[in-house]
Length: 112
Image (cartoon, rainbow, N blue to C red):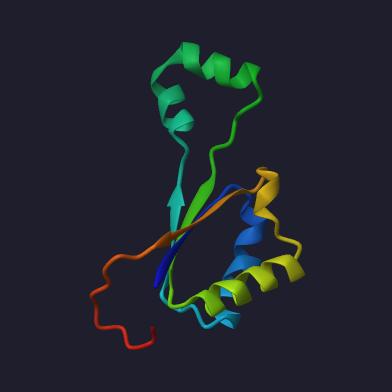
């Protein structure tokens, strides 16, 4: 069992990602709205707001996607579908993807 975490910075990729999760049968997935810490910090600090604008970093959007991945085969299938859709996290401009081992899992979901 693994936990997949995606921090998505490009809103236009949310629907294709959701379709990939569905196609892989990864129904134990949650999507959260979010804001980067730089957005929160700039609201209370005019100086930080100006620095942020100077460097062109005005991103206010992100989504956090968390999914339980039951086995390596499911993850490999997920990666194959990402590639087929042209979604590549290695470039760094769309967000990032983490795959973490799950030490313990408790719950009543029988789909895993």
